[in-house]
Length: 323
Image 1: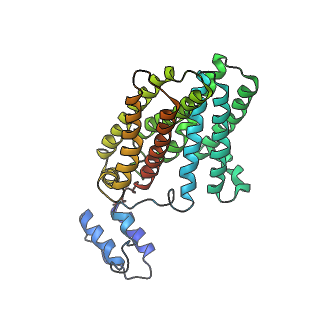
Image 2: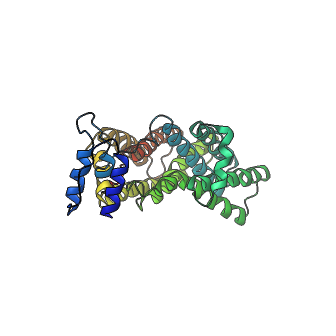
Image 3: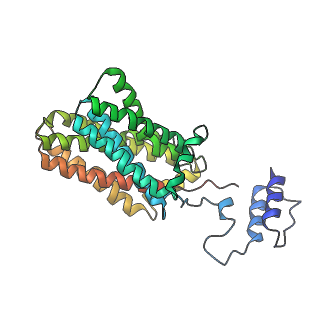
């Protein structure tokens, strides 16, 4: 392994004088040798940092990466709304969930792809690409969802199929991130459970607000909102705890969230807007004292908090160093 590293360094540093390393006996000597190959004083980010330090990922959250963040969010909350509406046989919720997933989520996905005319090529890599598998799931959802909306059929078999498809769509964004082993905070075992409850929780709030506006009995659904909120809070805690103890790079990501440059956004966006304020409104409505105004304000803060959580999880990810 040491010899391969040395040969690789020789290749990438051919214009420079390579430092003799035959007598290196340990990992620290290799690191020092790599540092000496490049000038350490020209910039804050050195060419060798990705080999010896936990460096931040930037492709999925900067510039066009913002579109991916929004696309995942809209697709997942639309699927969450469809999921809740389907089991309560609420057709208006089915229509809105279908439109949010395909129109909002799909449109923003196109903005990320660069050349929309070639997006179909994604569909050919289903065996090796999580993104391709997600696109196929959304395509099946578009067809079966339209059939259910058009026919208003809610038989158990169709409900079961569409329920599984909705869960897969809700998982899609974080599942695409979860397969990247080089980013331990994304590869955490708690990412997928958190993504599922996140999509269902936000979707359920849209669903409950629609019930309250239409004059349906929204108070009977409030117990589900209370349950989803408590599970959502619990999974955020488990994600932070489990990821912090999984590896040094993952620990650094959590420290960035809790103590570093993203701490203010985490405490204001996730803790205050996404947890404390919705919990406050939930306690006011505890026992069935539900009204459309409180449900609307809770929904708005839930939206803001979940958007912040997704952004910060993507932004705080750092790569595992090679050495």
